[in-house]
Amino acid sequence: MEISLIFEMVLAAIFGAVLYTIIGIAPGTDETAVLAPVTLILVLAGMEPIVLLSFFMSAIIAKKLSDSIPVAIAGIPGGVMSAPMVEHAMVLKKHGLADVSIRKMASGSVIGTIISVPLSLILANLLIPLGDLLSAYSSQIFFGGAIFLALMSKNRWLALVSIVPFALLIQGLRHLYWGVGAVPEDVTVFTSFFLGITIGPIILRLFELLNRELRSKIPRREKNLIILKRQEPIKGFPNPFKILDKKEVLSSSGSSVLGIITFFMSPVGMTIFLGETFTSRIKDPIKRASRAISSMDGVTNAAYIAGILIPLIAIGTPLSPTALGPGMALFNAPPVFNEDHNLHHLLSMNEFVIATVIGAVIAICLTYFITMKYAQQICSFVFKYIPHEALLGVFFGLVLMLAYMDAGVINIFGVLLIGLVAGILHRWGVNYGVQFMILYAAPWMVGHLVF
Amino acid sequence: MTQQNQSKEQAAENIEVWEDVVNIKDLVFSMLICSVTALGGYLIAPNDSQQPLLFGLAGVVIGFLICSIIVKPKRVLRYEDEE
Image 1 (cartoon, chains in turn yellow, brown):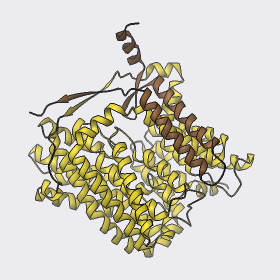
Image 2 (cartoon, chains in turn red, yellow; image 1 turned 135 degrees about the vertical axis):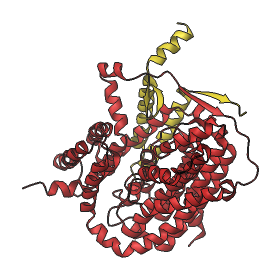
Image 3 (tube, each protein chain N blue to C red; image 1 turned 180 degrees about the vertical axis):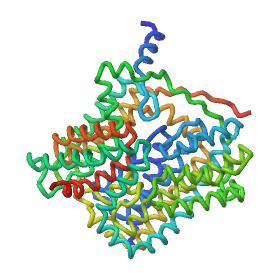
Image 4 (tube, chains in turn orange, green; image 1 turned 90 degrees about the vertical axis):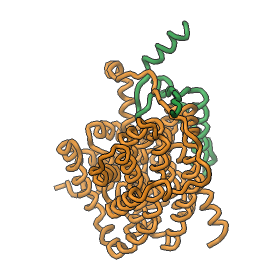
């Protein structure tokens, strides 16, 4: 491999780590909505596949490391996946142990990463023989997945009933675009619909703001009060195996392994489930909380890494929530990647290993080191100077641009329509997982509906 | 108008989106700015290979900087000293 390519990979990994350390800290940023558009742009801009992978690995590891910082310091989740940790982090914060909880969380993350990189690669290798079979039936699997996830969700009948109508909306728009000549008939608009789903809740909110009656009913909040703990800086390079005690290392390793094996399940669900299972018998609240946060952070990292690596290496179709969400652009980003031509087909096993290791090592070195030392300073900077409006504006702008790029002006309104419907469904309890599965299975489903 | 009144009036227009507090007017403003800079960049770029995308991306970054300078975050930080 050429030196210049490795240099590019390192640069891309540094870029990913820095960008997503900052975004990770900003409160409430959804993993899919912040990772998918940027990855997509890099794919479309023609970045080398191997460079893309090292960027992506570094970005997800950095995001997972940093989104637990605001949980420990201020009790607000930096992302959807860190929400389950808030309760435990608050116990530690109440006992004046916020700094301990950052260190335990970040160390759990590092352990999760160290375990999941090799284990995911091994598991992926074992699954390769099944890959062709799985990808041949991917539409059926996605359809089954949509039904399964719908049945698991809170409002299961609502979710179940919404599957076919939502598929009709997606296919309806595609046929409309072909009909009016917005795109040639061999082009299937995909990415902008995907992004429309991810920013659905925001689009729904915006439509509501235009309705006077609804606007007056939206609850008002004057300020978001965030209370930060002052931290003592740590000297030297923090060693995760010293920060966690033996039992914590064991339980975060154990739960990470389980998180990897269940890569096709929802990572948030597994985080809650494994975190609670591993700690329910501990009586001392402080010990219990610190065991819980270190294990949970281990699972989230492990599940995320496995969720992207295993489908990429073994299958070539995004058969996991991580791959369907944040990692979508690595599988399907027409015209660069499609189901028969993506990272799975372009990279060899060695290249997967190299890109993953470079991404992981850089993210851990940069983000782990920085977050350990300057957690409080970074948090105050982000909270003080980066307005939430600007972040929302950026992702909205990106989605509009990509919508226009996909199929012209008509698609800007098409994406608004998809976002509106997806946003309503999301609010009613039909989660992203179900919606993404429908998006994938839509052509197959609608094709089988005509009798 | 006194400053207090002003902040009260602004407070009445603050809502929660994505688990953080935003001001409706500022949000609409930011979305407009970012959309204009992103699409603008995409449209003025020379029409070859990846140029429009890169210009659009640059537009988004510019939009983000403008919004960050003009819009003030609605978070209030309070420090608690560790005992």
